[in-house]
Length: 555
Image (tube, rainbow, N blue to C red; front, side, top):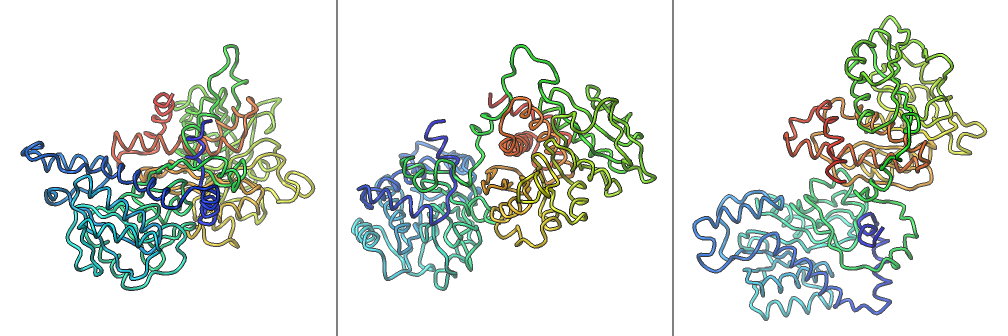
């Protein structure tokens, strides 16, 4: 994997970024030179997003529409009136080097023909930042200390505070940020929206609500937390060529938190298949799911598994569900089981000469209902990889026992002999791990603690799904869509993940990485479906039809 792909995976805390930058400066890179390079890249990106006004008459009568096209292409809200001529850009300048970056951007945009003005409410600035402000003013760029004096702008660039802010913002800056947030003006934040905690993504009193965030050098952890998304807007990385050796020196060869990217996902997919193979060599997955009340959960989980490409799929359901499952998944082996009066599975009745350990993996839970509690105990005693979701998690929480004690996983006192994957949403997470801090505050920290406590791989569903293993490594899925907030979409993920893990067992691929691949694949299918059908048009059944399209597109 090349350097660029590796850099896209890395996620850092504020302290780690400080340490990496310290190595760069210690090696001889002047701070001023790095500031010029970074700001030049930002200015170039801004110019790509919103070009300066062409010469008079070049856009003709369609100029406002052309501006709107540029704005909409980069996720900015449409402007209510035609833009200024040339575009007016307001630069919000802080006292540190983030403010220095902003001032160099101001200078470069000024030279490119933008109408630039500066807001800087601070009397004390770092020396380099102060020098850049002095030069900007010498060029005739107006500077305002009061937010009320700042003219209306077509775009604002936020350089008030960069990474590492830990204190709550106070007036006049806090009230200025609140005032700016009330305007309809698009805001591009440099590195991190001002007021956002770099690690947790929490707002510190208040924070800029950016429409676009240009993260510098390496992805910051806070930008990938669910509650930060309303402040971050559309985020992208500005790669300013941090040497990979400096990243390795601070983070080691395997960073403990990684973004899941297309490259990492495809590196683990069981593709291509060998020329000579058969269905059992391509994985055999057992799904245990469904009840008379929730037959749809079994169907959707099965459809997700089908899309994974697993060689053989067996589905254990209550006997009364067998006809409907056969009609939807004719290629699967549907195992009808004795059922309770309420229509739940009463006991597993597997085919002759087989038991739970005859399969490569098990996925259990969707639509099961808690009336099937005895089934879960049997499943936990199996010695093959297991994915638990939905009622599988709810039953587990009521059992009051970890699926995998942290000491000697599968050894003395252990319940599980193999990989266990738990896939809760925040409510299920709280029931499973009631003694852990609220997952909504710091999802990555919470999921890592849960994985270490349980000995399982834990996938915490959300806008930015977080995954962790018992060794402390974590993965974050950086892209998703609200279209997936629909009943049944989690069932699809369970089936997809189970199918991938079953194939990974036969291919001897890393099982934990398959969890991350499934999360990425599922989200990308949702994104594609939403683009074609809108966010309101992506039900769980439709989602399954887009899973194979994603692989076809990216291959």
